[in-house]
Image (cartoon, rainbow, N blue to C red):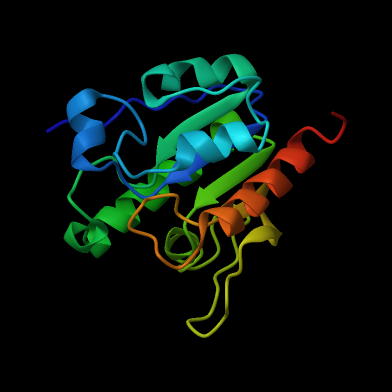
Length: 182
């Protein structure tokens, strides 16, 4: 099964990075297409887009300066199927994309994904985090290739750690950073 296309270009306001596509997303060919995924509603609620959009419009996000990619391109039923090799390869590819395209803000979808990205030795202005360091949602103090890093909870319906309201507040904080004047 094939992965999903990246929607990445220069001059992005925000590049959203997921861990990897789910099987339904891979089958329909669009990002965040899982029935319980809340990404699209959170995106609209945050006012990062001028109107509500759905997964079949994922390529249109580029029109609004928003990009989409994944740390690992391989679709799975869950992250338990990913290997350390998948993460290493994905991390290297993602850092190359960030260095090349230089988005203003890198929005990491998931604290676990942020931990993976920051887990190894410094590379591309990335500082490793210790295993005991807590990564909290919100704007981080570290930049990656001059891109600010904003960590968001994973919007998958499987994520029971955050209520919709808590996720919405964080997406809205990102929206305020990107569009400070409304």
